[in-house]
Amino acid sequence: MSFELLYGYCHCFGKTTYRHGLVASETEARRWVAAGRNDDRRPVPPGSDPVWTCPVTGCPGHVQRPWFAYRPVSGEEDAA
Image (cartoon, rainbow, N blue to C red; front, side):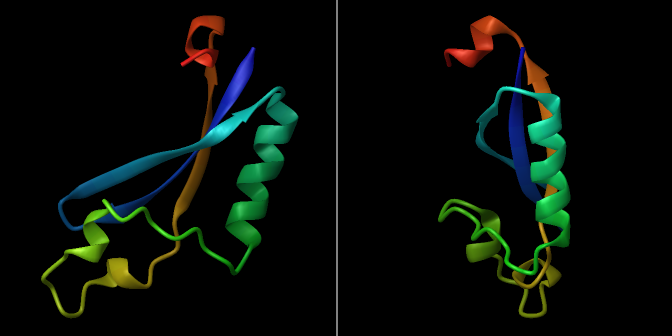
């Protein structure tokens, strides 16, 4: 079983989720989540993320830290 690494942002209108990749073990996935939560560097949201087009001047999304998570995937999803 593989684990899909996820991160995203919470916006005023909802939550975005992005795939970061796959790892082979839950231990690796846990390490990635912990590192993301403890690292001061943030992944840059993709150009399609609503934070880039939010019309709210004081939008907290412009400076927020992303959330990090993982989920198990079956063999069929690994190939996708």
